[in-house]
Structures are given as C-alpha cells and as structure tokens.
Amino acid sequence: MNLEKLREVEYIKCVDLLTELLDLDADAKEKVHKCFQKMGIKNFFLCLESLDLPPEIFEKLNSIKSIIDLVERKRGQV
Figure 1 (cartoon, rainbow, N blue to C red):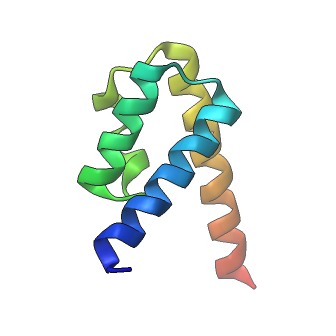
Figure 2 (figure 1 turned 180 degrees about the vertical axis):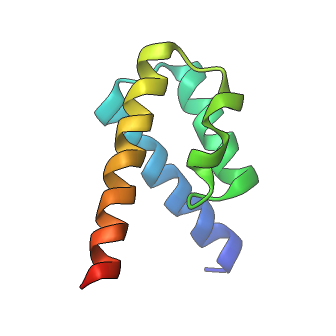
C-alpha cells in the first residue's frame, strides 16, 4: 500500500471515530474528511473555524483539542 492510500485509510478511520463520538451528520463528516485531506490530521484543529460546523460540534471539537494539548504538554514535562 502506498503512502497516499495509507493516509486516506487513516483519515477515514479518524473521521469515522469522530462521527461516532460526536454524532456528526453526513455534511459535517464530509467537511471534516476534506479538511483532513487538505491539511492533515495534525493541522485539523487549526482550521475549525473555517469548517462552518454547528456550534455544538465546534465546541466538542475544541474540547477534544484542549485534551490533546494537555496530554502533549504533560508528555513534554516527563
């Protein structure tokens, strides 16, 4: 499997997980997937405002981002 196909498989897994966790509708799922494809998973949280998602989904994604940031900071302290 080449790198692009592997990336796409990972994007789909991540989008499916977020869809399950946040109960995303088809439109939101597609927007998240396109953002993954465009910016990558690591940079996904940098473009949240541009996704035009419902406020409750935006807030949930911001909460996930905060948790990820906290974990990354704690790793840096160890």
